Image (cartoon, rainbow, N blue to C red; front, side, top):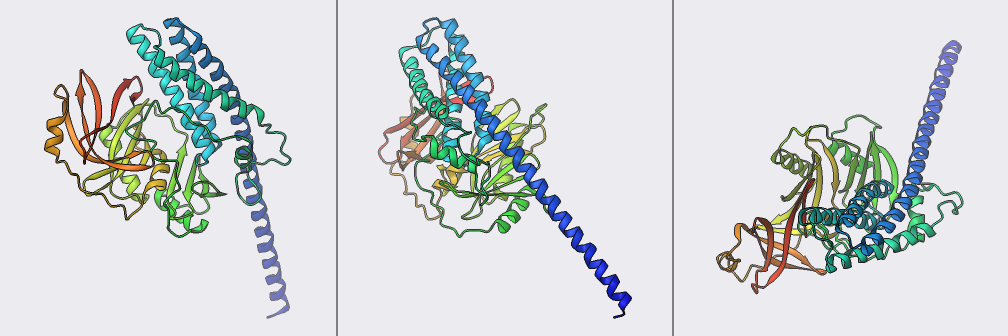
Length: 433
């Protein structure tokens, strides 16, 4: 090659090197800015959460002391509103961490129960009963424990605290786990569908191989229909009951299990302007999504409509038996059909492929004959339901009694009643108590 050619080639490679260095620096700068925004957002959410838990503590104790139906109703409504805001803040800290999951569930159920009691007082005019006050008092005691733990944790006392550790982990959440006691027990008062918090207090049965972040990114691209390269940001690995790879794209956060590369959770910011799709349309969309995500043989068992957002529970079905422990929850926007939320915590903890279901001893005709005579039975199906840390084969009887919907669960071997759940219609959906 001529001397002139060598000079041209040297200049060319020099320019390419500068472009590469510049692009790398810009990408690193962009990523650091993103992490800083995320960290600052989590700090704000933490401080807001502390204020809201403190406010809930005051209101719950006032409810216990109050004897006036009108004032109780006012306090219950205020508590529900504060809990709704607190839920958003605590959920923004993380979605797969045990501490955050327990806190989200507690705040959700406290708010839902307060809303249910407020509506009950509005309907009957009666003040809270002794049992209802006992339940509120139990929630108040748990909230006080949570308040004390959160207030004792000094977020500024940790040197070099960062939302993300150098190894890609979540430093903020790790620090909270070390300083905040997660061993909170609480009464299960409200369900967002039958057995919607099934058997979370055991080790996951995931026994598949571990996937790499690169393999997992390909899975996310397939599930969410992403074709653009480098659109998905890898935010690191998070250890927990189910270890996950955390990723983000647009305004969405995704957690994928390291073992098996399964979607654990997905959340995005979205508000429904006007409902355009029916509940059936949204169920079809939810079933299409879970199948694409690798969850097979899933049957829809519950739907609630909250301000145009459809909350749909689907459970695993095998040989005509629905398995409530293996549940996924999907949020569908009823204006576009877009999937805006997903949670497979129960499924990934409880599901295993070699589960065997014994045949029932009692036939369906006997169960139908033993159903309450005043109950208008709409449907009977076999259901494997959680009982403690075990599962029991039952007949699920769904029907109406005195204008109210009920689910009655009867042991398929003994004929004994296992559980009765009452459906409460609210302004924004249905609750089970």
